[in-house]
Image 1 (cartoon, rainbow, N blue to C red):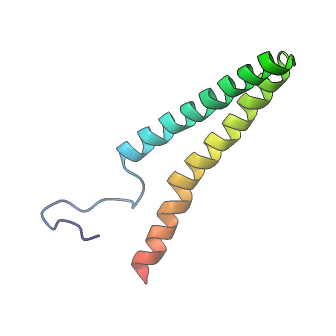
Image 2 (image 1 turned 120 degrees about the horizontal axis):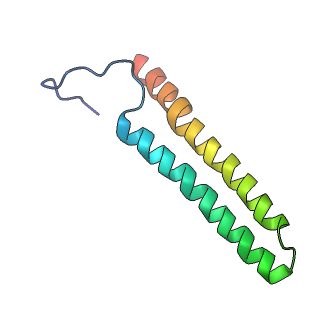
Image 3 (image 1 turned 45 degrees about the horizontal axis):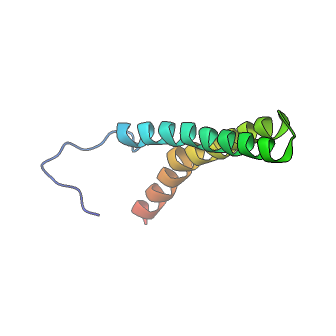
Length: 84
């Protein structure tokens, strides 16, 4: 992907604001999705707080992994490809 020469160069090579905001929303959505899934399973199986708690934990881990991958791993891979 070629950059427009009329635009100023990006500094730092890190993610821009839109990527950071998207990562935050994805983190919150991941927790909410697993929280609701845990609540639904608790009602169906009668295991009242345990699957909700597990859902929040799994959602938090999945959300954190997604943020880490988007904001740390993918930019490093892009930088390596650009240096070749």
